[in-house]
Length: 179
Ligand code: SF4
Image 1 (cartoon, helix red, strand yellow):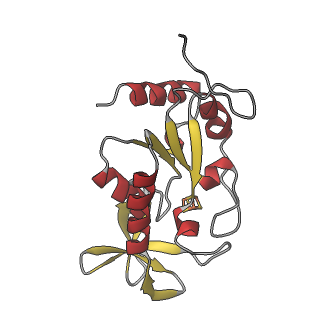
Image 2 (spheres, rainbow, N blue to C red):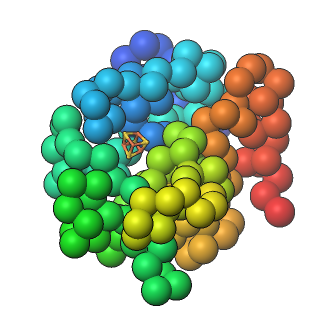
């Protein structure tokens, strides 16, 4: 008996395709703090030919609206918090971390593609602030860092690492040959 091939609404073959979570703004959803998106054709169209893509916006999922006040990575007494810029007493780091764990447990993911420089989704290139507002370094967003720490077998990349077909090929290769 041959392979059973499932097709989606567009007639694309979906059997055996890895499931990849993608920052929803990269797929054209208007979920950023300013109500805009960060659409990436390479991800939404090219990567979509090889993988099943599932959008996720951690900030919307924890109840922050659109549009919303910005949040930022902030170092306080040696700990990384995620504070609202209009109210530094509100820390959403724990809700973001809890959502990350639950999200991964609910989906049979092979990897994630996450938007750069976000206090939720960024990977090592999100600005870290002091409580007084100075930029004191770079870190990872809490959604991203929680997943990379607790689920190290997942292939997690920045959107900026998927710019062209060669990058897509490299990513697909990593999915099929995990370290
Ligand atoms: S939290 Fe992530 S998915 Fe949501 S708007 Fe920010 S970068 Fe995009």
